Image 1 (cartoon, rainbow, N blue to C red):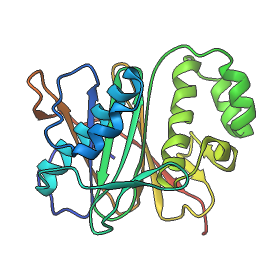
Image 2 (cartoon, rainbow, N blue to C red):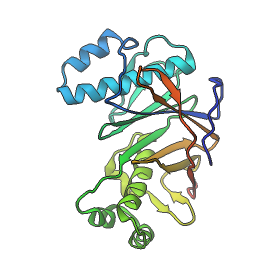
Image 3 (cartoon, rainbow, N blue to C red):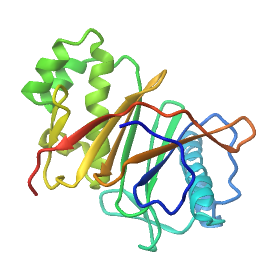
Length: 241
């Protein structure tokens, strides 16, 4: 599956994806006083990530759905933020280092994850704990084990986030990188997408009917700009639920 830049906000089969660095200029003009007040109670580093993610979400929602101010949100018990109004689109936000990823879909909650391709101590021990035997066998055979590890990790994180679950449920997911299939509880109607860009691993968990990923970034003057399409690896579900 290959992303294809289009601009029809009425598409039911589209995921709007915003990938940007948190150090780029962004405006809080579309954020409510309540969100700004919430950020003021956080540490500087956390507030910066919090405001950057929501400001970018606000610009994406404004561009695609015409909402001038980011709508009110609540946090679900597992820690996942959602819009209060169930008629509004679904979204997910991820960050790694200075990079942010924001995904928006019309009908079903997406999951997204981004991981900067960086060294991490003990990746093979983590793989042995959370990944299946098939995945560990595949991982050992990869020339770049670090990138391969982040690929498997990202795919899991995206699916868990789409379902409002935590990393403690990672072992319930099984991936087959060669066949590009996965198994997970009650995920028959989901698909997983993975791609690499220059510095990071990106993954999406989307309903199977979503066929297009439209990518944006933020330019140096804080405006949304279209990004070239990525080539996505598509994983289909083996689940029955």
